[in-house]
Length: 400
Ligand code: NDP
Image 1 (cartoon, protein in one colour):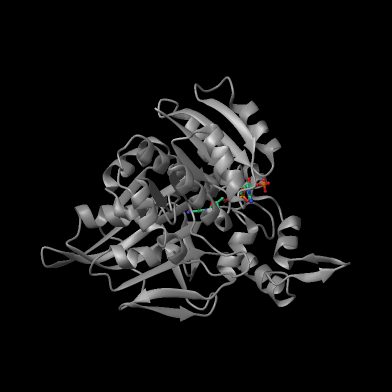
Image 2: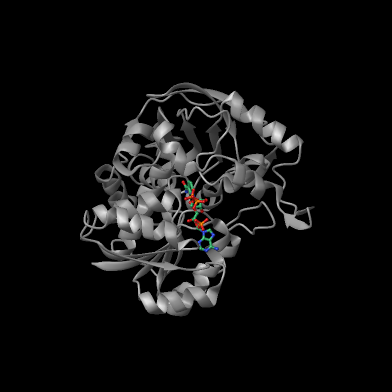
C-alpha cells in the first residue's frame, strides 16, 4: 500500500518498525533514518528475510530541515513517522510541509532549552497543513495516543457527556536496577521533575512535583503509589471533550525511584542549564543520561506488567455513569515478541497503527489534528489485533 520514512531508531522506533514489518501489506516499504545509521543498519539486518516489507536505511540529522527535505525527496515516502525526540517535531513538520508528505508523531514539541511542553507550536501549523492538503497526526503513542482514543471511544459509545477523566499510567515492572528510566532518560526526567498540573473548571491548576499522591489497586498489577503529573494529552482533551470539568494524569513511581531522583536533583544532576567541565560545556542531565542504563537494555531483565487506561465519569440518559478502559501489557511477553520491554511496546504499536490509519486513508482530513479528533473505532479494533487489547470495566473504583 505505501512507503514510510521512519525517523529515529531508539526504543520506541524499534518496536514500531518491527510492527510495520509484521504488517507488510500496508507498509510495503520503509526507510529507517536516524542520527546513528549503524543502529538502523543493525535493525534492518535483523529483520530482513523475515518480512515482505522492503527496508532501506539512511543517516539524517533531524534538527536540519534542509537535510530532511533532501532525504524525503530522495526516499519519496507517503508519510513520515517521527520517532526521534520531541525537540525534532518542528523541523520534521517543516520538511513535511515543504515536500507535501503526511506527518505522525508520539510526543509534542518541547524546546531543548526549556522543560515546557505544549501544543501551541504544533497547532500553529494547522492552516499551512490544511492548505498543503496533508495531515499531521499528533500524539500517536500510548499516552498521549491510546488514552486519547479511549476518551473519544468512551464519549462516542458510553456517554452523552464526560465530566471527569483520570488517566492512570501504572508500570508494575521491575528491572532490578536501583534507578533506571523506561524510556529516554532525558525526556523522562524532564517530565517528572517539572511541576504537576491538572485541568479544572476551564483552567490549569499547578502543583509542586509529586505533591499529589494517591494509591490505586490496578487490575492484574496490584496496589501502587501514583503521583499527579502534567501530561500533554490533558491540553488537547480539555478542548476536544465537550462538558469536561476536570482531567488529571497519574503515574506510578516506586520509593527507590523517587529517593534517587530527589538525590540527583539535590546535587544538580537533573539540571538542563549548561555548565563548564574541564573546558567543555556539558548539560548535567545529558551527562546523567550517558551513565544511566540504556532503556533498550531493560528488556531482558524487566518482569511484571503495565496497566494504562482512563477512568471516566459523566452522564448517560440523565444518569451518572462511570467507566474504566485500560490495557494490561506484560514486559516479558513483549520481550519475547520484539526484544523490548512494555513501555517501548505500548508506544511503538500505536505509532504503527496511527501511521496505518493515515496511509490507508481510514483517517483522511488535511490539517493538524490530535488523535482524539478522529473516529476512534477503527483504531480500537487494530489495538486488539496488534497486541494491545483493551478491557472495559463499568464499575471501577474512583479516585478521590
Ligand atoms: P530513544 O532515545 O530510545 O530514541 C530516540 C531516537 O531518535 C534515537 O535513535 C536517536 O538517535 C534519534 N535522534 C535523536 N536526535 C536525533 C536527530 N537530531 N536526528 C536524527 N535522529 C535523532 O527514545 P525513545 O524511543 O524512548 O522515544 C522516542 C519518542 O517517543 C520520544 O519523542 C518520546 O518522548 C516518545 N514517547 C512517547 C510515549 C507515548 O506514550 N506517547 C511514551 C514513550 C516515549 P541516536 O541513536 O543517534 O541517539
